[in-house]
Amino acid sequence: MHRTISLTAEETQLLGRVRFDPSDIANPQEHQANGDVVVALLRLLNARRAIPAHRQSYFTDPAYNVGGHGKSRQQIFEGNGCRGEQIARHAHFLFHLRYMLFGANLPEAAIAAFDAAVADCGQITSGDALILSDAAKKVARENYLDGRAAEEFYKLALDAGLDVDFARRVRDAVRPLK
Image (cartoon, rainbow, N blue to C red; front, side, top):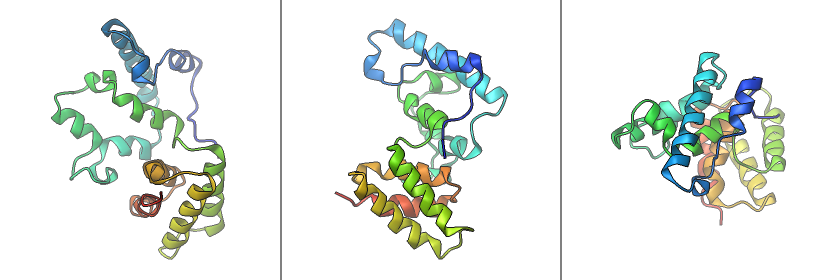
């Protein structure tokens, strides 16, 4: 399953101008220009509700922020003095924007293997939590990934339609890998 959201021609043009790596932004003027593009892109995406609800929730809902001490990622930005469009202009928001647009940052082989494991379960039930957690560990090992990929597996599980609790179990299964 391809995880990138569908974009209009105008959104695609804007996306081509976004610099996702903050270290590639050399000065305040470039940072401002990048922020302008991100804000314009988000306005278009939000106007047509193009970002999947679970990806929005990943940023806005405290329940989706594992280890967030009851705060959403958005609330953490706000607690640090960023509000509204300032959040979208912040260099650290680029990480979240990337997920909103493209899904989990994992090798295609890992995504396909995990998707296959989810499909093999059919209708997901509580008994599948262990099966999918084990599958995630297996996929991570086969793709030479370690515990640093745990958050991306969490996002992948959300994209695969698992609820927050199941997705956390997948994350927690991958996290101890070395």
